[in-house]
Length: 243
Picture 1: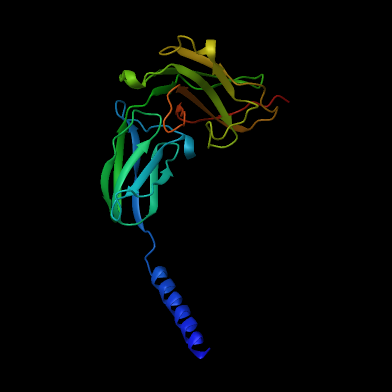
Picture 2: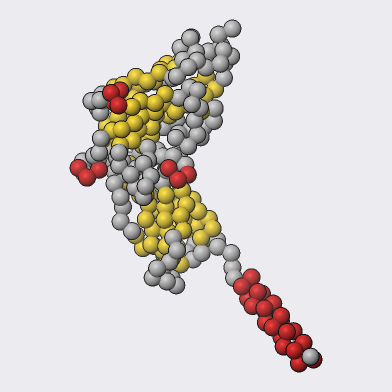
């Protein structure tokens, strides 16, 4: 019985020592940051946040040839910053509403900065400023064009939205269905390269307040099962009180 007690005590001590060894590993503290810009215009690439925006996939090859992928996402203006990365040798593959990029091997140690120049599937640009109407609606004008000459990524235009939100985080991931307008089918026939007008759906409240607008458009092209939008920049408007 005494021998068994000693054995159990030894096992407990071994587990404790092992746990201490694991806990002594340093915290991830390296930084990978940068931006995505349009290869032709050099303007910041406008995107969504979260899974429908830009996904940056990192695979650490320091210890394995088949590592588990680690993903994180960009901000709406195409910038990114991850300050919690272990030092190591990574294969990095960005994915978004642009012509795919090849995997790039990068050593992450300290702070590493990277600018990606991409070819968007579409370019969505404002024409002038939003028109705030006295009847509680808003009209915007935009032009949608191809962002690449690569025929493999020139699928048909399938959908466009005027997204409206009460916050500056606005897009397919955050919008008010009450005011946002969707364009489908015949409304998108032969519109590429032409100025189009989109009017908000429904009336804004009869008191004055701020809203945020953004137009997004997408083709039928999907990447990893996700059909992403290309976007304009974000516009802030103040509605007109109707009392």
